[in-house]
Length: 247
Image 1 (spheres, rainbow, N blue to C red):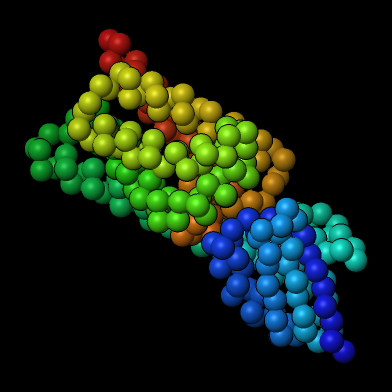
Image 2: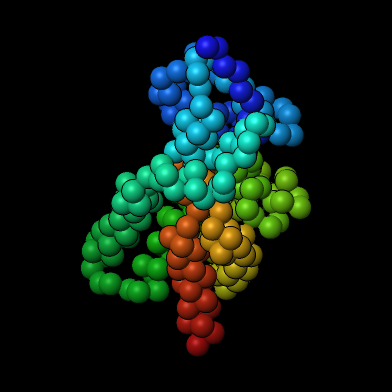
């Protein structure tokens, strides 16, 4: 029997649609599907043979998004996503790999200079961090802005902030590497990351299973305490540098 279903989703952009595509394509009974990202409800329309609501909501949840059917609603967002949650060790592999690479590059720089300097190493790490993260965000600026607006308190009130944020990171990264105005740069980082962490804290406390936009839309990283630790680390490093500069 042919079934046609519609779902309200949080698939805000074409990058979100691309992320969910392999999971929906894997549902055996689905013949055709499309998402209208131009509507406020981001309607996902699915056609196929004897399609169940759960098969679609779980497929969307595997990609880190939420779909709610018109005929009935899923019991909770976390139920659908937990049923298909990707193991943490695999999910955060890109983030862990990037952190390892950045640490390795900083270590090699210190080795070449012949003596380890903690302040210099920390400054170079923060510079490399911001440059790398800005690079991934700029690969899909619109997709990042859409994802960032889902949880950042500033971007929710000022959508254009999501388009500006990667360039702020880019400028901070260049300033750290070049050693320009360290006090002002560290103070800016402290304020920027503190404000950014508010939305992350809210999402973690509310157990919201949404995509973290820290690496743009290239990787499907879920929002979690790992994201909070990442922000906290940058806040601590900026505060430590400020204290060191003050003395």
